[in-house]
Length: 370
Image (cartoon, rainbow, N blue to C red; front, side, top):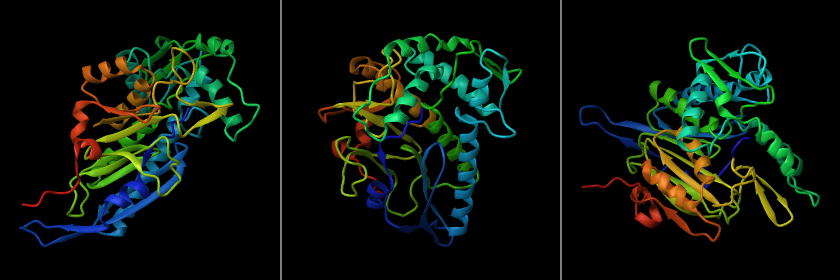
């Protein structure tokens, strides 16, 4: 199930904090002028993907933006559980062959599946890519009632419990030598929605950086990846606004509940306020607790700041499904930077994140001039 969440990037964040263009100068070379450009596209991961960055020319930026769009689309097709595409085996292909035969897949899928299994163990099962049978039921209800209906209901618990019998991640077999993934039971189904978007964003950001793009930000449906400082001569970090769950994100006057300043880090938020439907007065959102099989109810939003977007994406979901004491203990044990937003609007954060927060730590993105 796709995760659409929580961070205001373009209108609220970047345009309010950034200067449109700037320059840097090396004393050994003539002054180089950099201009800020941005691009967005809609054909991958069921979300708007936006790139903002600084280059010398618009042609240079356009080349990087086109490369990013092509790579996002390629990864979208690999990680898609709903559709197959001509000429490739993907997550959907694996699911269709559950209980039948191993499927030879590209290395990106092998890496993602192994990565997810590793962190399933690390998080005590709080993020399980084998939860597909359960999440598929929830997806159907989300699609049916997303527009609002007085007849909206929850899925029957008996149906969810039956589906949960086929979510054993130890039955997801990865054969590196053969390059295959096999689901042992025909009822099994992979769903990588809790990690795929952030994982892809990191792969794309690293590719662009290797190609020579060294000052940019990618926003993939709230999964934010930053590379090097903005080349405006004013800032040394990017400012990432964290949405206030109580505010309508479509309101141009809505303010962020906090701003995180980051460079060469990812900022990823999970929340209950972007994808949901209503059953009476109950908000039924898409982040499903694997223990209860129901939407997790500990927080309105949870943000993870990490140097890897894939890990931040996975952990933001896993931690969202833990009670606060367990969540905080896990974060501190793994030296994670985490910010929690509770139903009453209270904000908590780990001590190591404080220096990067505008409102609580007094952080700024401005370069200090001597």
